[in-house]
View 1 (cartoon, rainbow, N blue to C red):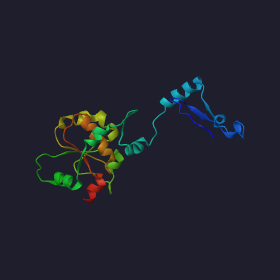
View 2: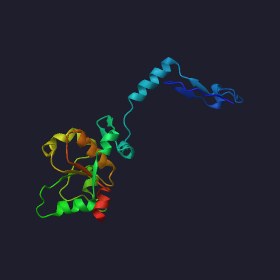
View 3: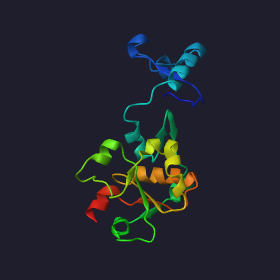
View 4: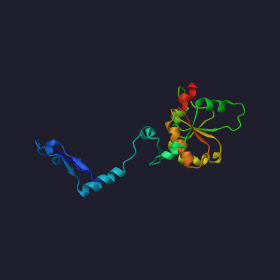
Length: 187
């Protein structure tokens, strides 16, 4: 039986069985630590990798955002402070003939999603600022910091991230559309 010991910051290399004794029962014959030179080369190359093309889809699960080459993860407190607005409530707000205060509706989907018709059609009067551009485009909406702001996306994950970004930028009346435009269009 082999005993494994955790070694912090250790980079290990698994070697194929053909490169060591085929009949060995010792796991240490198959896994060897990198030399300091190899470790430095590997660590340097890993930190300079380009971001994958589909990173936003992967980050949505974690309610994360991407700006430039940096990934921003909202804190648990920021995500917990995001208030949800019901689709029927938003629908009545944007369709009222003269609402007391029209909310700023920000659709944080990609432009191709925003412009497409069908089940993901946009909320009337919404503006499109993709979540990955929101932090860099805050200046466009800064004058609305005290107004109601509703972030929307297809199903609600990206809008939570966007709302937390706005809360972190001192917007005080921020909501995320519960269920996204899919729920909005069914309401």
